[in-house]
Image (tube, rainbow, N blue to C red):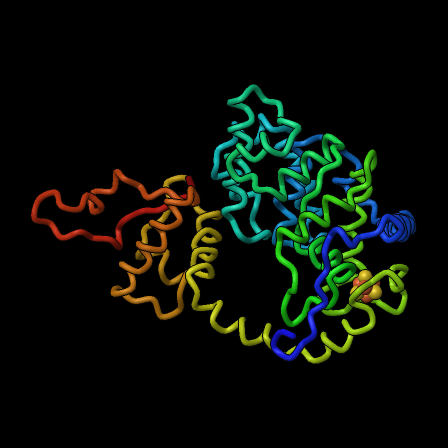
Amino acid sequence: MEGGVTIRRFAIEDLSDALVLAVREGLLAWWEANRRDLPWRKTRDPYRILVSEVMLQQTQVDRVIPYYERWLETFADVRALADAPTADVIRLWAGLGYNRRAVNLQRTAQAVVERGGDFPSITAELQTLPGIGPYTAGAIACFAFERDVAFIDTNMRRVLHRLFHGVDVPVSTATDREITALAARMVLPGDGWNWNQALIEFGALLCTARKPLCVVCPLQTACAAFPAIQTAIAELPKGSPKKREAPFKESNRYFRGRVVNALRSRPREGIALAELGPEIRPGFAEGDVAWLFEVVRGLERDGLATIAEDEPGYDAGAGDEPVDLGSVKVRLP
Ligand code: SF4
């Protein structure tokens, strides 16, 4: 018992061949009947897979599709992205949020070009590229090079957890290591591409976080979480998204996003902080300039903004003149 809840411990050695087979067959049959025809599923180009994976990290599939297509019209291959002005890259990312992803994507492209222009095909080598973690490396190795590798994202983790470890809310009862071992055991030799796509799709459409469609699930009889999952979800506290919204509008991330948005529509020479401030925060006063300067410095550290160093007032410490931060100009890199 943990916290009054009976935990069903699952050991991977207990996983019978019959259960593995039943889950694979059921899931792949569901996939064949329900798969969405998404643009990144029609390609084996590692650059296109990378772009889709980075966009999908924090954004829903339906929203990503038009951005993905527009992106590839502008930056058709890894060299086009690597060579582009970073300001153009950030501008084209407008609307997707989490702007650092755009800059990191370009850094990855630049690293690939520096190494000759070809993506490596194995996960260990892919992970030596900047911005590529275990999930993205696995996704590129599998979806571009059709390697039978295991990797886990939130959807895959949830499905594997429920199927083999049981109910995953309010707390997970399996470690990432255990889920990764499960994922490796379940990958279908010779068809890892379909298996991993199926697992992701199943978690996105059927075994969702808050509304799993257990009633119509073809894996019911194999699933360790069925039927307790519905009760466990119904008992979760409600209303957390609303509570999160209020603090976000005062968060550093919120203001960083506003600054980058404002800079997108500015000419190359940029804008002075005193002029930018009122666009960023209602009631912006002279005393807020130092705060805005720190926000902008953080953006500069992340490659999302450039502080104009030729601005006379920015030359802090030169002579006895007070530093006029309000006249400091900032622009996209
Ligand atoms: S029965 Fe429910 S919890 Fe189990 S895999 Fe199917 S949808 Fe997910």
